[in-house]
Image (cartoon, rainbow over the protein chains, first blue to last red):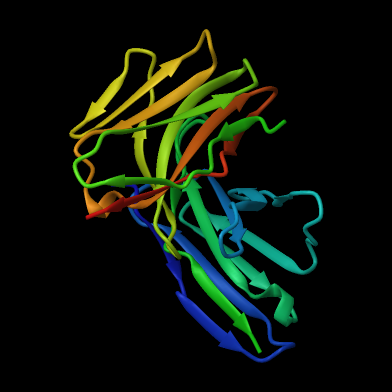
Length: 116
Length: 111
């Protein structure tokens, strides 16, 4: 149980393109979803937290107009990187949590984004 | 000082060895504890929850010491496939739940 699917796994695109990443909880209802990015050999960095039907809460230093998050249903959240540039290249990982806040997060497979 | 601290390692051990990791947390409002493993260029995966009474899953044993505010992970009979980064994760409730990830401890198991 607790399967989270993330799509796409890899994206390579030109600078200026907007990229949409989907995160789905397949066998549970995700009341909260999280978006992280991770650079090579570094720790996970939380970008934002979203609850279904509410606006996402962004961490300090993360531009909400740059990284658009939509959590329209209990099983789907999307992250759109708008007008992506090479410095946005990273490993983006979503996670989902069902039930109350002291439950563990379950992670998607991650999306490796490369902006040329 | 970080709220959740781990020795980054790396720990280099031979196959069959027993290895232990500790993780300390500073916020006494911490209430849930987990170990995750993350393989290179992959997502973190939940390994096990951690309780004061201890939690054992095959070769893995996790323990929580609330008085000293640390959790531990013991791996017995290490396998090559155990090579990964082990993340200590703490959830605290201070006016809302927040999940704090440790930076991870790297383990290399060698033949």
